[in-house]
Image (cartoon, rainbow, N blue to C red; front, side, top):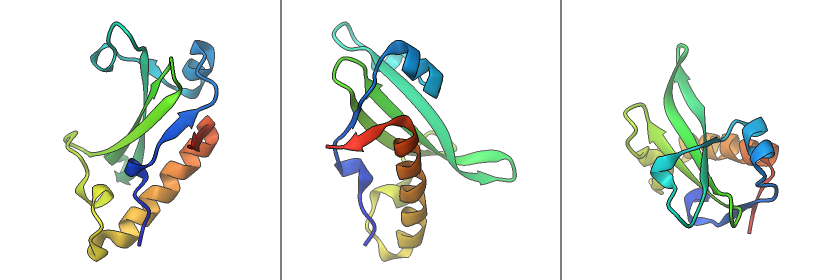
Length: 112
């Protein structure tokens, strides 16, 4: 069975503004409140021709380093195969998990 990455807790080691900007994160007011400063990084997981169909969004809280990932389809709805354990979607989920783990490694995000 494929691992459920969305159930795990992750932490980013370096959350300085310069490093986040270098990695492609951007500050976003929709996920930030008066007590936290959150940054978002999006990257395509699946493309059709040259257009992204499935997108991973990593949100990092700068104060704590906590990181979460969400996977969306092209209409910005949660991508069902990533969040389910149906056998039908196992291979697709494993490919998505490998791609997300590779990006986590590049960004310095570890599982806690």
